[in-house]
Length: 191
Ligand code: VGL
Ligand code: ZN
Image (cartoon, rainbow, N blue to C red):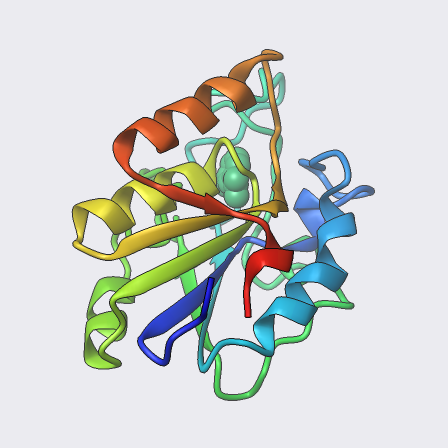
């Protein structure tokens, strides 16, 4: 599949707290960093979302279930856990989108209560290639919102990792996205 000038890469939440050693670590989350760096070279438009919570965010629980809005304290704005993975390359001209910045609102999608839709439309973007963390949470909702907003979403399946809690969730979400019309590719199919 050929990457076009009207395509954008959306890298979702490649932050320390979602990588091993972080507060809400996704298994193998750090393993996709080299592949994300490599695929970036194909894209003119690059967007990096960040989960960027206030310290009293409504999803934070002392006894988290690791699903459905009950998570440990994670990605508190301006803390080390909220920083991008240190090996992730973020170009100076890339767009950084912060989400879920309000205490009383959850936002899993990079489009939820942000400028992302307008930013992509301003740049003439038609299709978005999505990767990052977590496949069954923020990647899922970002892909579904991309569809809703009229962008053609393509999921780069080897450059995402799921929470998968309870087990089986990741597979269900893959089916859901396929059904909704999200196309799936592997990074080595892109040129
Ligand atoms: C995420 C759980 C809570 C994610 C964000 O980026 O997938 N997951 N907040
Ligand atoms: Zn969060």
